Image (cartoon, rainbow, N blue to C red; front, side):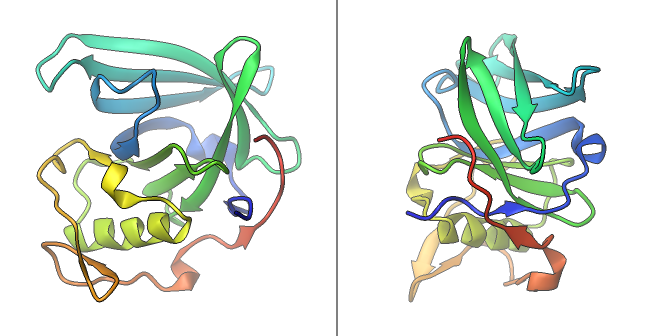
Amino acid sequence: MQPITTVTNLDLNRFMGTWYVLADIATPFDKDAYAPTEHYALADNGRVQTTYQYRKGGPQGEIKSKTMSARPHAETPAIWGMRVLWPFEADYRVAYLDPDYRYTVVARNKRDFVWIMARDQDLEDALVIDILRKVEGLGYDLTKLRFHHGLEDFTLSKDGGVITGAGPDLSASESEIIEQSTPRFGT
């Protein structure tokens, strides 16, 4: 497969803060995580300090957190080397980003893990469907997604190859998504 295309002109400072993970394909490290959030903070050394917070085992489980750091690519800040386990860095690519930094899709070239995140837990169903179409367009199998933060009961169906859901179709125009580029970095 082709490398995941990333957004251009990512403003790292604006990307920092808390993101609700609305849906993901879990890594081996977070298969037992429910209601996860990611919090990013830009450190003085240029690395992104990441705190992954979640409930362990179920929606009412104990709150846990993991701290990691990421190294944004100097020329393409939408590509990060995420250090989950020293000294290895995992490929982390900001594939889609709302111009208002309301929602984002973080993907990997291997198409093994993906994160759909938003600043707010309450995205309209139609917008969620549009984001899911984008994720599928990247080459992901949507049946592997786990849903969180009020989307636990979200169901997908395909009607003639088109993803549908509970809400009306809201297709974002290409101008609503930040311009794309195709840099190569990481695995």
